Length: 114
Length: 111
Image (cartoon, rainbow over all chains, first blue to last red):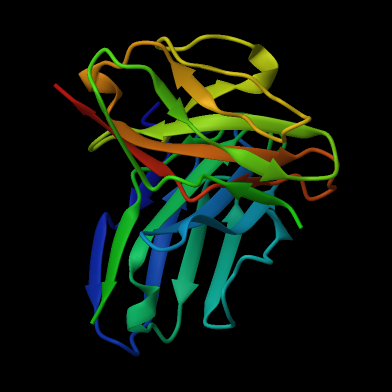
C-alpha cells in the first residue's frame, strides 16, 4: 500500500484563486482527517470524516474553506477565494475506527498564496 | 477547554545527553495520549501511545494524571532523534472522538 496519497505536493497560487487539495486514504480506513500546519499554530485539525460523513468541522477557519468526501477513497479540501494567510502545509490522515486509533499521515501539500 | 501544551518550540541537546520533551494537557475526561514524530523529509508518524506502555527507539512517556503531563523521555540522545515531536490528546468521551495536537517541539541533537 502506498499509504495516504495527497496531491498536489506543492501549490502556488495567487490571492483570490480557488485551490483544491486532494486526498486518497488508505484502503479500508474509515476515518479521514484534514490538518493545517503552520509555524505559528502548529498542527490544527480542520475537519474529520467517519464513514464519509463529516463529524466535526469546528476547526475550519471560515466559510472560504470546504471539504467533501464523496466516497471512501477520495476527499477534497477547497479554499475559495484563497488568501495569503492560508499559506501552510495541509495534511490528510486516515485511520481505521475512531480518532484514538493510530492515524496515518500523507506527505502533505505545501500551499503558497501570493 | 481541551488543550495540549508543549512549552518548548526548540530543544537542543548534545548526543548522549538525556532528553525530556514536555507535554501538558487539559481535559476533564479520560485521556488517551500519543507522541507523533516527523523526521526530516518523512511523514508524520506515531511514535508511541500511553496505553501501550512501550518503549520505542529508546523513548518512553508516562501519563501523570495528577500533573496532567505526558512528557517524552530518552536517557541517551542519538543524532537520528533530531525531528519534530508532537504530543496529542484523543478525546475518548466525545461522540466526535478527535485528536488535538500540541504545537510541537523541534528536537536538535548536537554531535
